[in-house]
Length: 250
Image 1 (tube, one colour):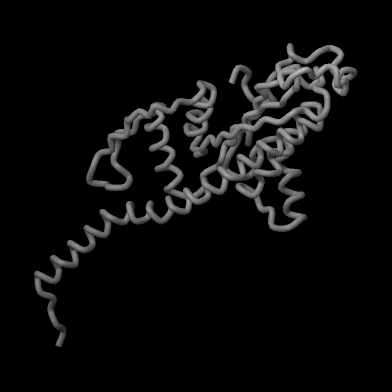
Image 2: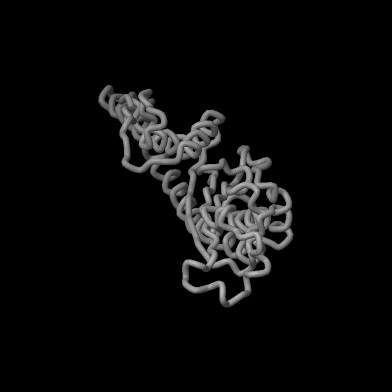
């Protein structure tokens, strides 16, 4: 004979199903969000290494933006492309050496690279001739340094977690409030409209919002580095202060 389920058993099963449905989004986010944060941590470390490589290359290449950008991208490739063999590394660099995302569900520049020093006006017209003259360097102030800042538009690729984190970040930085259903607790309405004391340059904020509008969820990782110029800066490499396509005045 078939045994009939008691009403209490059906009620308990229904309650368990409802509780599971309510807690599943949060549980899923805890797992996927943890993975995304670990990837962010790795990318942060490589961003600091990338700006060092860019400045080191610029210091021995007369401040050449192309060489600096290539050095930065090569250092960052493991965060968004396959680089587990020399062949894969070469293909990845060949695909992205124009500083653009290709075939990765993202568009736009991979990095922005500023050059805060030297300014074009600070480069003497006889820099090539006087660079190795010991009499020129009376103090540390006479030493020309290359100071640069990198903004790495790190692509967040973990599904669901990337969207939730993007909404949280935009709200936290005062760029866009979120007041729809809470994706982590469906029975509540989100009120993500807090403001942090940290601010972004207007150009970075606009770029971040534009990419979010295209459903390209990125995090702008920043790092800076400074090093003495080991070759004379050439004015031909400083027609613009920042390396294209970085906005001027950043």
